[in-house]
Image (cartoon, rainbow over all chains, first blue to last red; front, side, top):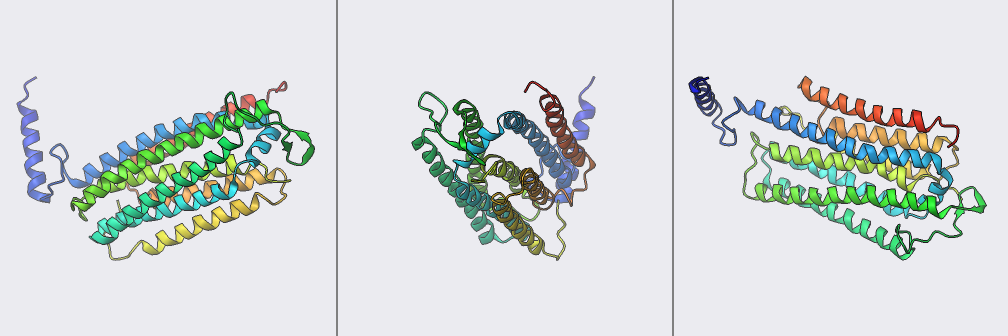
Length: 243
Length: 97
């Protein structure tokens, strides 16, 4: 097991890559920029697969309890502000657009558009969290946060105004609501951190039409968080909106 | 991932963005209509169409040339469906529930 062949291969790949591509962003253990991009992309998608299973378990718990306590879930869901939820959906969709615009700007060397799009994405992200905060405040004031001060007395069930929802079952809904939207919000906060770093890199002029992989990977993460919200919105806010 | 040809993807990006916003408005409005058990079906169908639009066009799965990447995406969806379908097949068919 001599290490001389490895050194030879290493040296060859290194020299060839730098000779052919002249790309300072190309790491020495990759043969060419395309291979480096594909490796990053594959790793990111495998990470997103673990994220899908992570949120998938919560969606599964939600589905089981929703099936068991549908009327109570309907009553609890109706107490959440659906207009704020819909607004937040639109805010996230707009932020996904500015993410693809940022990548396109890097591909076409448009510095102002790149930095503007990244700043807009972060502003949309902050707006989302702000609206979420208003929503949480409403829930705190209504005593809908699971715990000792939880209260959901005499709330009629949709379609059956003469019947009241079971507060214990409604509390399960609000537990799922706070865990799912809370973990989603945590992902948004992490996303804002990633985009702060991307903005600094963009400001320093690190991204070129040949190298913008961090933008693409950060974008994949942001779009994934958007997709989670696309499902959370109808499942949590719109279970049964009828009187 | 994307080719550096002269054709600009901007028109596609803005069309997808508009479709996603329209989908959100339809989801919101449809929730207040009396559709019985189809309320959930409509909401989840629109959500899935929106998720596919984001994945295919914004996350560029449509233009991906790598088979390994497609394998990862398809297995992710497969295992998610396995998790949800098998769990619901159990809990959904228990007579005592």
